[in-house]
Amino acid sequence: MGATEYVDRVDDRDRVIGAVPRAEALRHGWLHRIAATVCRDPGGRILVYRRPGGAARYPDHHDVMFGGAVAAGESYAGAAARELHEELGVRAAVRPVVRFLCHGVLGTYWLAVHETTLTGPIDPDPREVAWHGWVAVPDLPALVRQRQFIPDGQQAFRRYALVSAGGA
Image 1 (tube, rainbow, N blue to C red):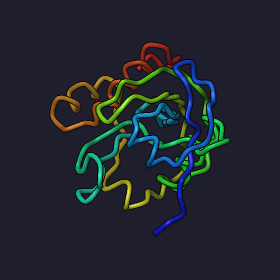
Image 2: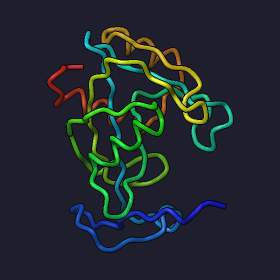
Image 3: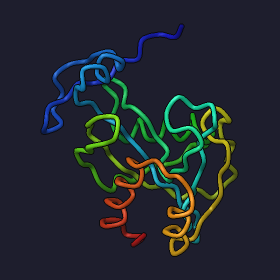
């Protein structure tokens, strides 16, 4: 069994209360932080992926957000960049776009959405990404209607699209 993952427990204004095991934060519904990134290519397309069928949460669901929990003491941007490296095998600078209190399917948490432009090859972790492809922004709504997407990711993408310079 792996080491205990600690996250910052935060209040309703995203101020740190203290570090707690992530499992406890989830079990008790304590607010904590999540960082996610929308990846674009130089032409503005969005990287979409499908989770593996054996994933513990949302198996075979699609998403446009790459990310995960912000570790205790870690910045949102640091977590977003770390998750990109872990999930896609890339090192990329991320730009913060929007942060909000997300009332997600599995609980409520602070979510910071970032964006990056990927220009080189990616090497997705097969434990995280079963399929991936670039999708033009105008084609994304039809894909969302045709496939199962993670609800929290869609909520976050709508917020991102409202404020992003890319006008997704």
